[in-house]
Amino acid sequence: MSPYMKIRTLICLLAVAAISIGCSQQNQSADAIGQSSSYDENWGTNLEAALTKAKEGEKLVFVDFTGSDWCPPCMALHDKVLIQEAFLNYAKENMELVVMDFPQRKQQSAEQKAYNQSLARKHNVSGYPTVIVFDGDGKEVHRAVGFSGQDAAGYVASLKKALNQ
Image (cartoon, rainbow, N blue to C red; front, side, top):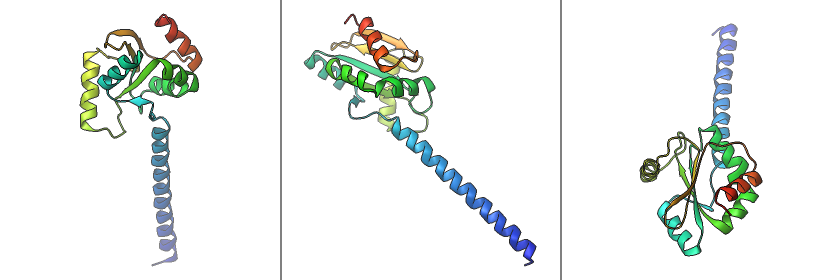
């Protein structure tokens, strides 16, 4: 093999290695984004269980219908409000939290996917994010579609006003 061919082969190998490293880092970044925007132990995924707990504790149920890994307003609501201390402190005292996620890239069991879709149909969810607040009997007491960009304190104040608290 001529020196020219050796250099050319080496350049091709380096290019392939660089592309592979770049793709790997991009996938790790996407995973980190997905993990950072995940819901924590404060959030359940079963409306009926949350309704039972809410009725026992005389609380409301806050349900976030979201596309957590593809919907920019959903991600903004999550990051600016739903994981912030002002919201979580209010929710801890007043609500059971439920997330109905409709991801495109995140893994989700077939059962959870079917359950979420059935609830979205039942409650006429047609846009994301949709937040529905239920009383302990399962009666809808508040609905909001979209996200206006408020911070957590402003969101809580608006929610209290909508719920006449």
